[in-house]
Image 1 (tube, rainbow, N blue to C red):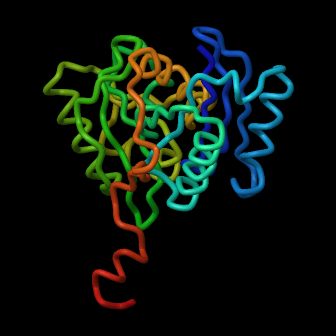
Image 2 (cartoon, rainbow, N blue to C red):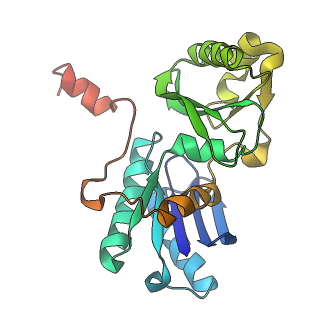
Length: 238
């Protein structure tokens, strides 16, 4: 079972190729260039260097959000194009779930946080005691202070002694989290703090085995929060 995973939901661009339970190759870029410049050349390079082609791919995996509005659209457009061109099914997975999967097997409450701008983060909360994350608080957009409050409340109610935070919504608000979480707080290590295409591919293996595929024609990004244009349209400003 060959999975090609494509992630562009944050400033990170990531591509991974996984064959059953073996990660063959992963590329990770978090530096300046736009996803529209980097994503497809990365896909081509990963397949070519691993001596594979699209005809051999059993499923495509893509992060469906939340995250960057532009990044999500670019990634989804790329995956839809590949899917339709080569007749490959698609697995769509939450960006927050992919982030949480970085901390598999943890005895802490795992809380990924993505920078949503406007002094907010996208977050959800997971029990990661097994190999795959189990959602205990659904996805939402909120202030870092509200995230800390909800995380502490959830941890105490569920018996977790520590809380692991990760994602690009962590560092900008580190002092807020430290103030409100105190000794409960654990910082994820730097190499696990951002989305990894390999984590996306790992989650996609189980969905592919169950043939739990997205309806590619109706697949849309999951933004959680309205875009600025949609907000202004709702106010009658556009």
